[in-house]
Every structure is written in structure tokens, then in C-alpha cells.
Image 1 (cartoon, rainbow, N blue to C red):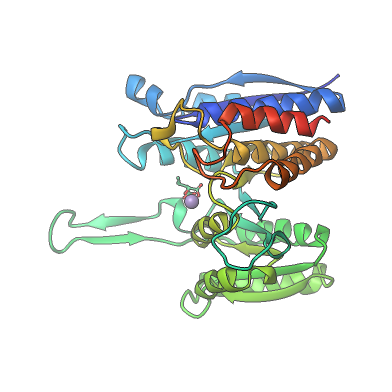
Image 2: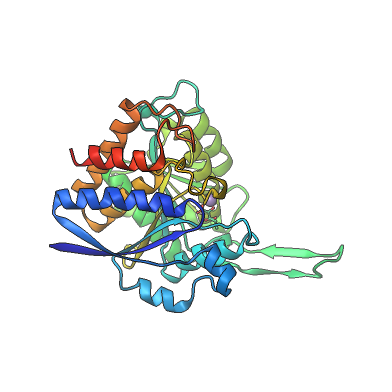
Length: 354
Ligand code: IPM
Ligand code: MN
């Protein structure tokens, strides 16, 4: 039987609960479609860091390379200074495994509440391709005269043409597969004259030469946030640099119903990819059976899609559509689903295998 090796990193807080429900659903659809998973669980996260001082050792990166994919719950611990786990685990994994695409589908499922008045599921259905390896995230820069009134902080946004090109290629390929073949580049070319110009020229060149079927458009990042709220139906696929992508995908997650339902993938098309819900570890909800596992379940569906198990992925998407649309979960936030974490997992596993 076809077997996929999955590295599971539950992480902190509610991460354990949501990946448990995710694996429940993944195992159920796998059995139905005739394949299976073999998993190994890794305890990287806040507790381990507090115990051992270790975040994510290089040996773990080598270990991860032996798997077909990584499935992660959440990273973030109330007793650990902000930044340590984010940089030491999450960003280290993304960078060391060169997961250069952060793929964030934005889809309003039926029955899910959006804060946008008069917007329906057909209006909110697009994908953000966030470049995940460069920009302001590379740690370039420095500090002068720290702690004095003369202190200066420098943080550099850096992009190589190859980084821009590989992200654009990924985004154009996704646009080719969508109903509306439309790709919007989001940047700030009016101010970021070096990086913005690089992205813009690369976008135009690649679009003209290789993807003439794809309609191209450009939005400044500030305008993007406005259009996303006013007219999210404009968007089909958005491609953007790392930091802008970070910011606009929180807004995007919000208009699709919140962190409880927002899924993501950190993708290296030539290597090992990692799938994670966009939300954090929500420590105050740990082990209360109230956290919404749908974001983790949908991230699992993205993992299936990435592994080439499209039928199984579609089963999960259809099950979530049915669950939100017909099973009376009024809101998707923690504690307000009208159902517990495990019950949501059970329900989706059942619907996905019906
Ligand atoms: C995200 C997060 C991370 C990021 C943080 C935790 C480093 O906000 O996945 O969007 O900025 O990429
Ligand atoms: Mn973010």
C-alpha cells in the first residue's frame, strides 16, 4: 500500500489537539482512498525549550529531510520570550528546508461568519502566494548604540532575482489552474524603488514570455488591504513578498472567518514541505476541547494535495463545506462552534468518508 512518512510537530498549547484531529481525518480519508501514513512525532516547542534550552537542532532538519512532509500544530509558549521559538523553530524550519512558498488559500466556507457585510462564499475565494525565504525576514541589518538615545536599528529587505522568479513561477502556475486566470502582484513600488522594481520587472517579463493567458494586475500593498475588505471578489491569486504577505494574510484569514479556519503550507516544491494552521498556540484554550481544528484539518488537506492525493484532499474540503454549511456551527472561533474539538474532528472524518 502506498505509504507516506509524516513528521508531526504538535508544538505548543492547542497544537497537540488540532494535529490530533487533523490526523484523525487524514487517516480516515487515507483508508478510504487506499493509502496510509507512517508518522513520527517530534516534541519541539516551548516545553522542550524550557527543559533543555533547545529550539530546533540541525540534526532535526536532517531528520525531517527523510519525510514526505511535516505537519505542525502551533508554536508559541507564554513562558518563553516572544521571538525565540518563532525564530528558533518556525523560521528556522522554513529557511533551513528552503520552503520558499507560503501558500495561504482564503476561502469563505458556507455558514462561516465573515466580518464583511454582504459578502458571500462566492465573493471570498482566492489564494495568497507569499514569498517565504527573503525580504525583511533574512535577519540582515544591525543595531548601533543600543540602549542609548542615539540607538539606530537597521533591518534590510533583500531579494535576489532567483527568489523572485521562483515565487512568481509558482504563483503563475497556480493562476493557470484557477477558474479565473488572474494574478495580482502586491508590493509598494512607489516607495520601495529597488525591491519593488525588481518584482515588477520580473512579473511583467515572466507573464509576457511564459504565461500570456494569465491576466496580470498590480496593487500597492496598502490598496490591497482596502480592496480585500471592499471587494475581495477582485482577487483570484495574489503574489507578494514575505512581510507584506505576512500582514495581508492575517487580514485575509480574518475575512474568511478567523484563525480557526485559515490553513497554510510552507512549500519547497523540490524538497520537504510543512503544513500548519495559520493561527497561534492559543495557550489559554489548551486541553479544553474548544479550539477549532478546522484550520489544521484543512492544512492536512493541503498536504494531501501536495502529496498528489487530490481525491482525498477534495473529500476533506467537501466535508468541511458540509460541516460549516449544514451542521449549525454559528461561529468558527474557539468555544463558539457549538461542538467540541474532538466532535468537529469526528464529524469531518465521518463526512469525508461518507
Ligand atoms: C506567520 C507568523 C510568523 C511569520 C511568525 C510567528 C514568525 O506570523 O506564520 O504568519 O511572521 O511568518
Ligand atoms: Mn503572520
